[in-house]
Image (tube, rainbow, N blue to C red; front, side, top):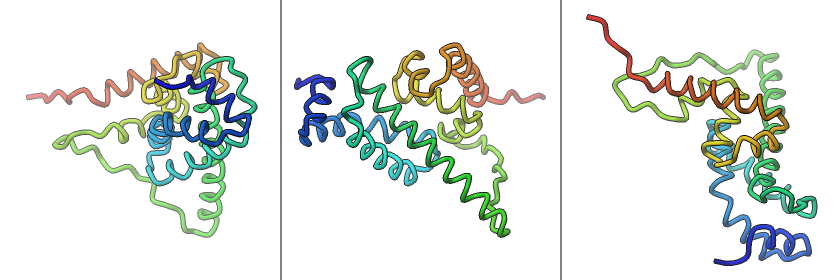
Length: 178
């Protein structure tokens, strides 16, 4: 089965790049899918994931072994996501200032086709989407999601519950009246 994540992190902190490579191999799918769901853009998510793994390698000695490595890595990825989002908002403000803003109107739902989860997630508020993705796509507990986001545990639970209800409503079939 191999070494535990915490053992590999200790080896990576001591300079073992192969150990860090194994950590990346184990967790890249989780990080990439989590970021893809948060951003709604797979290419952007790939860029952020790359930055997150670089940052994790640079900061690997900061992993204390308290809590899971997966949770720590998700926190690093989430921080990179927030930094990219801030940068994106700044760029959007610049584009708006020069009259080159993007059309942000949402296309109506096509009930004749299968509804895409990413589209449903895009209807959630940003905080709701982030914690829903962390908990369901990332497999983190509410406590781990609270640690990753810096939000209080009760707030995370509320966001997850509201997000789950909104997703349920999104996927419920529309009842036709006769």
